Length: 255
Length: 255
Image 1 (cartoon, rainbow over the protein chains, first blue to last red):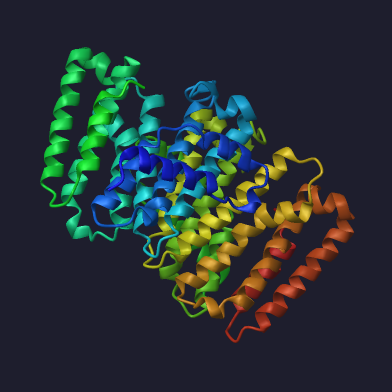
Image 2: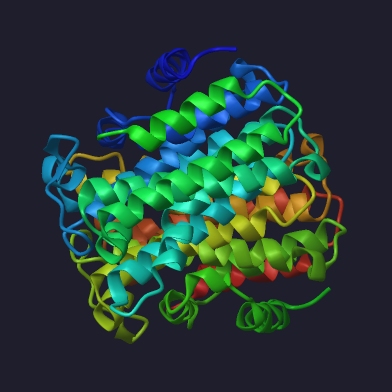
């Protein structure tokens, strides 16, 4: 079993070596820029799930890349002036600030399409189907975020963050060839993982759950979600040590 | 065999009855707005090809809807202020002019994802794969359009228009269960059809091919493409009368 850092390194190498469609011409530069510097949380979860579930990391790399591409798409469009108006991302200019708004709109579109292309590189359409459903959920969450003042925070995050986290587990399972009938416990784990990630995010940003529950309340929620996620892992009859490490890392992350 | 108008009526009914994902919440209104009023050229071609190739129109409706959703996505994003800055589309405010830029970015994203979801509703992943490849080509064409002053017009149109036209034929074939080994003549037909459509478009808009070749030169190109498209149809050993009608309608259209 490879540790999270080793999985991340393999994924970085895979992403760096991805060949995009030549028809994209110069658009590729902004896509690569958008893909640079992420923590690869979703992709690493996908790889760790695939390996724990009896698959090979190699076979799951395209699925992990698909998740990172779709995640990058969502950031590029969310940062646009008309949405969150973030000129900075990961300590440097966001895609629109670097390449202009028009190129950023198209870069996001192309990252989404390329992510789905990677997910559809498997013989089964299950990965593509799950990723496209998750994407629709994310978009719905973003819509709530930009329009709603009176929004159900749990619903917003379940969509905006939770759906792609769930797909990270799901795509790892499909890539490993786990039958749908065997996926329920894994998916319950995914739910807790998404919540855990989001609440920690809010504590770090001082908004969302942290604003509603206070930092202590939010930290308590993190601890509960981590406990439930561990319990879900214990219920699986496989070696989930790497995933337990990922839970711990997510619970105490500071960036 | 149903005539183009009958196919269009069935497709309109199908599109009106499409149920979107509930997670999209209020986003759905801008998506339905974006879908209203198109000529349905791509969807009707898909249905006509499916029926001519021995499939049923009913089975091809999701594929036709997928094409129209992806086409609508491309228009919504192309109209944005940062791209073509078109405040009007089909005689009324474009999506961003009606719903705001943020909602328009998300509406385009959701139309693309929903289109791929429809294409992935078939047992085979072939439709989703072809649609996502065509989408990447379209995005590449749009990138050339907004960035290049010195662009190869044929390449730009082959990507921006031609790829989705080719996919309209391709998705019809897949929906009808035509094996890849039997698709070559159909795809040669698709190529001519895409060119025909684009040159007529340019004549109507007074740009592109019409600007480079003059109206007479462009009309001659239309006639040549139509002749070659008919020859491709003749080479197919099936009843392609409806598709011949579509060629004629596209060649003489005035809007």
